[in-house]
Length: 351
Ligand SMILES: *Cc1c(COP(=O)(O)O)cnc(C)c1O
Image (cartoon, rainbow, N blue to C red; front, top):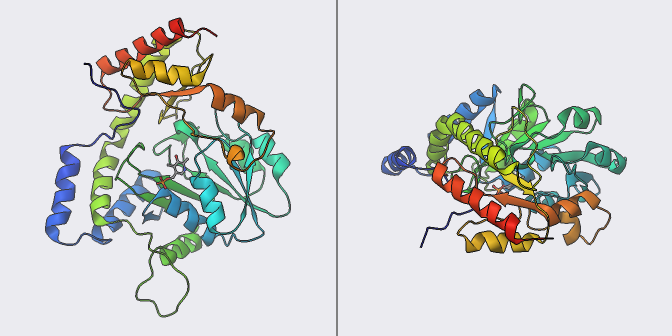
């Protein structure tokens, strides 16, 4: 039996083990010095003054909305084609989520559709850079509504020459186990606005304050931070390897009847998502039979959960988008197996 190739796999090893062990041996395992160092390293990478480490990307989105004073009666625009973390964050603060359709070429939120959904109550747009490809930030910034960049899938990516996470009012990152940089669970919030950053710092933990208000326990541990620092040191290499695998896929798959992902120089290929013909579940089953785990890149669009209709591009994309394994630890041999499985699928699955 050939081993199964998973859809995601963290790239972790001796460097992570050693740095986490050192923290454990130090006896200071909660939020402390290592978190502060990780924040500094992260700020330096983005050339920003401050970052705040948090327990998850979801916690980061929640704090970003709270720091912007967004609450009941306010509307927040989010894409429909994304995980429920965004919908949750808007609901955590009691605001009204307004899903928008996507651009079917890039899988990113469509600025034209966002524009139609702006009202007097719109307070923010949460913009994920889907699968590591920058959203159309120029058009989105022109809309004049504050933007929260969701860089959960796009750490190290760029839009033209700007690092992702440096163009919006705030940006949120995730270090969940499947993401580009992994600490098990974890996240980061960044902004150029010192006032927003200090609010987020204040809300992240609850102890030893002169006043009382509702605060959270959204801290990262020093063990996660140590792992994050090791991963951050390897980030450039991770991205190069992702691009290398993407290029192998591009070369091998362009002769098949598939729609290949749009690429830009700043794209980091968190996912490699192809458009397929025929029943997507059959593609997933047929590749699984060959030991390759492919997946829908978004489990179910948000408008479906909310009972809304009219999201034509999101719906069509959900029916045809297939995410195939891509991560730095995927070997060339494994990449070849994924390619063979897709060749086999195109032969077997006729429309
Ligand atoms: C993973 C993800 C999140 C949520 O991050 P968690 O750390 O899992 O809470 C938010 N937005 C996007 C686009 C994601 O991919």
